[in-house]
Length: 625
Image (cartoon, rainbow, N blue to C red; front, side):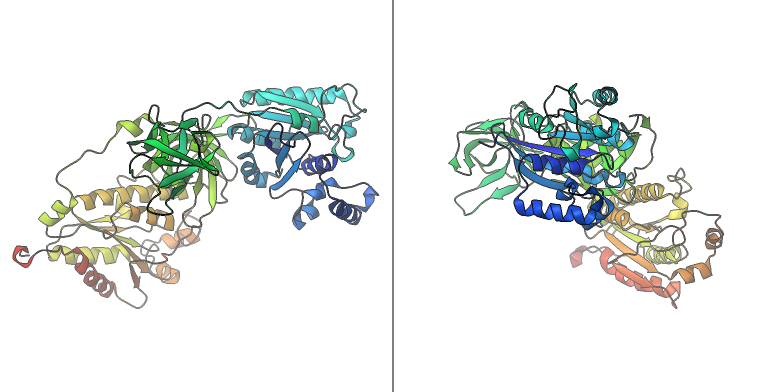
């Protein structure tokens, strides 16, 4: 029986050259999980790459499969291995130790129940040891095996071992890791790996393999019933069920449930498992639930017990581990995925970032690669959630960059903000349609984007003058003018540019709601922020106008002398010089300004605009203008 104690998922982690891959390779070897052909290949590769070892085997080659890993002697990507003994089955993730690959380590740790942390006996606890331990604690791993490796290089000295073990236990306790088991090992020769070592008689505990076979990581099956809907199962008109994996509590036929984040309730009519109908199901089981009535439920919703439903909110405090190469900018919109639900999200503020060496809380305005921050997160819709410490499935999330679709962060929800539930939309009877109709126009936002000196403000001003002459109600929001007032506190760093555009977009949105035609003239260099601005408006209320002027022409004009100052180094973060401008990929209007007068471009835009802002009336009701 190979799974007497069930499957154990664990990771090996620690600093570079602490011997993680060697230890794991030796563990596989001692467990009898290296087939003859693989052993022959290992022997051949060891002699080829490490002739100085003689007949000794380099066990790290069993897990370091990438050429770059073998050439550099380090782990780069997470290597997953399955093995078993007569007592248990295992899935182990060998995580890289280099700081640059911390995000790979976090990926492995997110699925683990236990961590085997390696420390080089000669070096003791290093920065990366502390960083990995902190991330393990952050991701909910509450049990660690500390393998103090390379004991042969310190003459199997118990004093060295005890000092490192005591220091690590103190670190783990400060990070909320309450169970730490230590053992001394020498991975290449297998001392205390697959069998107990006679060279360290002062250690009377189990070897690593015995420890992994016997360790108990089973979590108490507590909590209320929760199941994120992954798929609406409707093979034909006679069957409709909601499929997912139960992530909390248990459910029985006849139980009353609620569909969240809404409030619809129903009772469980059937519970269908892989083998047929079940009377009940509990945490970890994949089932399809059939309800006794039709409800509006879809992928991303959460089915919860109606007695104690999950909290619902759209603003949270949370820990964020930044995984992206580009810095995290507050107020930039990202895609947040939690369970099977996806919503737009932005980091509203960074309360502090954490020094992983000392756990000190440091002031921060942005997060860089591998940094951890405690943040306030705002979503554009409600989600059902639980604190990560209570339910990792409903409390853990990732952030996705909306331009590249790359995963740029993982996070752990802590609690919802009170204002999330206390502040509600107030219904009003007079809306933007009524306000616009009273003015004889359709509300609209024209968003002019382009380099400094491209002619945005000039063209926007000419268009507004023409609209005003025709009797339309307009307002021009110019980027420079706004910085004299509501955005006076902002500079030109990337994070300030993001906040600048967010505020302008919100003001423009209010003006459109007032029934106005709003012309926004602002560089807005980032596609992500222009997209976020567009998403505030209805589909037909926003026009992106790209005033496309070559950089050389903008510099030639340079009416304000800004390019000259930027080239001289007197102005920093100047768009087009030392800060990027991301050209629109598909603007609603593309104005090529080279060789054309602003009046001609304004005339072209006005003709396109008039067709959109005149409201539809019956002929007899159309007001005279």
